[in-house]
Structure formats: structure tokens, C-alpha cells
Image 1 (spheres, rainbow, N blue to C red):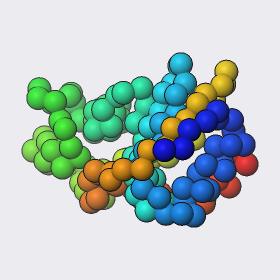
Image 2 (cartoon, one colour):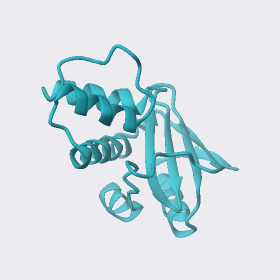
Image 3 (cartoon, rainbow, N blue to C red):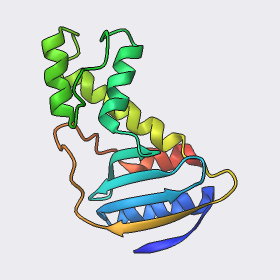
Image 4 (tube, one colour):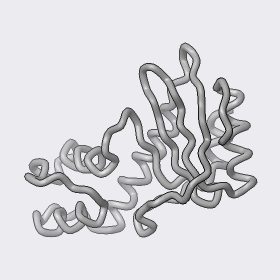
Amino acid sequence: MDTGALTQESLSGIFRAISQRRRQGVLEIEHPVAPTQIYFVQGKVAEVRRGGRSPVMEVCQAIIRAGLLAELPNDPLHSYEELLRHLAVSGSGVGGDRLRMIIKHRVLDGLYSINLDGGAYYNFKVLMVDCEREFAPMISIGQVLLDLV
């Protein structure tokens, strides 16, 4: 497990090291206002979770805000596959490709909105990441690094 203080400069170095070594695990950013977990599979970003919120419900709420779905489902959704089935049954017009695009944009938004104001700490834990491979955006960290500089 890697751990230490986090700044904007060190974040770029950590991202680069994870990507180049094709590591798999979770980078936990401990920040009092915006704790974030970034899940890596073979050095690529598969998921971002902020503040303990469910990523599936974040995507569902984004679809509602876009006017493509009237309301949240009665039962909580635990996977993107369940969300896709719910969207098909509700006649929302959101198919698999559009759902993958929405998921990718949510993950990118999570990466670009990492808050390091006031200082933060990180832990990187090597572990097998359980993600829905069909829906995981698998974002290469190269473009994110260019944008962060």
C-alpha cells in the first residue's frame, strides 16, 4: 500500500506511476470535504466514487435531470445492468451505448473535480477491482494528465 500527502503535482506523479505499472487497485483520496475513490484496472480508470454515493444512482439522477427518465425506480439499483433493464422497461430511449457514454462522462467529471484545497492524503491499495466490464469506461490516464498540467 502506498500512502502520503497529496498535492496537484504529486497527484500527476501518482497517476503516472499507476498507469505505467498497469496497476490494479483503489486510490483513496482522504479529504474532509470531498473524499474520493478511484478504481484502476490494468492502469486505467474503471470507476470513480465520491463521498460514498452510489455510482449507479448518480447516473440514474443524471438521466432524470436530462429529462430522459421521469423518476427514480422504487427499488434501489445495484448495477448498471439493472439500470439498463429499468431504462428499457420505462421506455426512456437510453440504450447501452448512451448509458456507457453517460457513465464515462460521470467518471471523467469525478477525475476532473478532485478537490485538493486545504490538503489531502492518499492511500493506494492493490486489490482485484470488481467492476462491470461491459460498462466500465477504462479511461487512459494520459489525457487526464495532460489536462491536469
